[in-house]
Image (tube, rainbow over all chains, first blue to last red):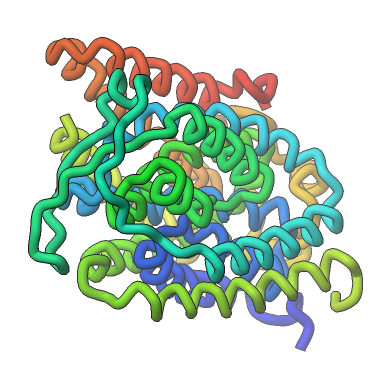
Amino acid sequence: MEAAAIPWWVWPIALAAVGFLIGIVAVLAGIGGGVLFVPIVGSFFPFHLDFVRGAGLLFALAGTLAAGPQLLRSGMASLRLVMPLGLAGSICSVAGAIVGLGMNTDLLQALLGALVIAIAIVIWRTRSTESAMVDPDALARMLKLEGEFRDPAAGKRIDWKTHRTLGGFAAFGAIGFLGGVFGLGAGFANVPALNLLMAAPLKVAVGSSALIISIINSSAAWVYIHRGAVLPLLVVPSILGVMLGSRLGAHLLASVPAHLVRWLVIVVMLLAGARALLRGTGLWI
Amino acid sequence: MQATYARWLDVATRAGFAISLAAFLVYVSGAVEPFVPLERLPQLWSLPAARFAELTGEPAGWGWLGLLGYADYLNLAAVALFGVVTLVCYARIVPLLFAAGERLQAFIALAQVLVLAAAAAGFFTGGR
């Protein structure tokens, strides 16, 4: 059946369902959701990639906004850690959004497919670390990038500090740019940058990643809104679905086994990335 | 400061959710006429955003504010509210940070408010 022959109302229902499921998985995996939403909807739904990327940014934004209060109250997100990194990312995400809206669609779709497959491999190969207490650098001390949280799974209070702050700024600048170009939440890179590079504990990295996405995407989303790349019929059911899913995901974060979620995300990303790559290269329209 | 941010974020996000849901129900129920008829969208949504705007007469930049009487632009306004949630929450904690003597953090928060306000105003995209 041709997509254009399907009644319009089928698509918002399908988008809300997809959004709800991605919302749960995204928070558990510490990703923005856009990294699943954009390749899935861009490859299997009939909308132009401009609208899908605009929706992807708002989708990741809404999901992380919804999860934010719970993550902040539990101490699994640190506003002190998020603020300087989010500022670097949000400035670069605006530049990325402007570049992305000027690019050829097929090229963008093929690059998106390749990027999503690469991200899936990075997630697969990356080992998280429950970092030991590190010696913070001068900038981290000045910005007071430290905190504490109570881990319900481990049943203890964990004090943490971070280091390699300049590397963190550079990483979040690059992450923000890519997020803006492709309409992704870019949480796939936030968590390793916070955990492996800066040595934040994994749960703090996952929680803070969600909050950083909400900041980075807030600025890039305006570029898409001003350029007419936001289609409410696509965006609203998706974000309503993801907000409900994300709230559920934030409540489940402390108890769900992370490795199951990780494998689910890897498989879905490989499939959606391959589809986007084939579509962009014209091998499977 | 973190607790205040969380509280404001919670309230603003819940409000955004409720407003989006209400606006969307108005849109799909047909209670208010959309600028672009729903039945026409499947022929248009596979086109690039620039071509879509050309064919529908969609205004650029903030021009859509003049079309809030239409259901689709009412929904766009609801969606745009999510774009200001972070700005509002940051604006709330700036005075708290200054009052707590955390000047460096306060200036970072203030810079973030300015970046978000400039993006919302269309400063980075020439107003469109």
